[in-house]
Image 1: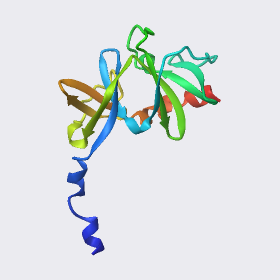
Image 2: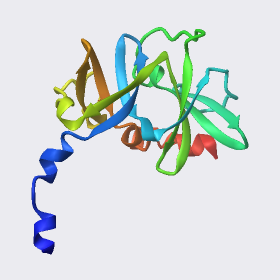
Image 3: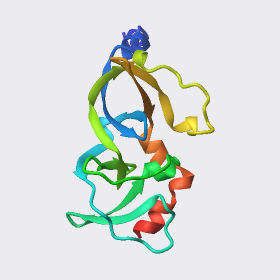
Amino acid sequence: MEAMTQGGSAAGEEDLVASEYLTFTLGSEEYAIDILKVQEIRGYEPPTLIANAPAFIKGVINLRGTIVPIVDLRIKFNLGKIEYTPFTVVIILNVAGRVIGTVVDSVSDVISLTRAQIRPAPDFSATFDTKYILGLATVDNRMMIVTDIERLMTSADMELIDSAAA
């Protein structure tokens, strides 16, 4: 009986199970991240600067007693001129047991995607390292880069977040 429950078409059914993603814009591109990694969305307010931090770490904020490093992905991804507008927001993430804020141009909406809807990304590592990309999805003629935000935020080149927050 046990052998029957381990086999079957679980992989095929997995492709049909939808997960929810928060979509946001960085420059002219739209990104999607797992909604379960998002703690909250806040309006942008200038953080407290940290001396000698890399340019993409804007500083830290005090979020109800928790010191949260703020990363501007627009700077990290070299997206040209960075403007802080009334639409600029900070997505507060909970990744790998840490709270991290990321600045984005704007938040779009929450969408449901199945694994079957996420296509493998082509190799365009000149602009974005593909190891952080789960794939590309198209919804209503909008193409989104589905990003593994936890892998990105815990990557070696982001390890400076730990020292900035300490």
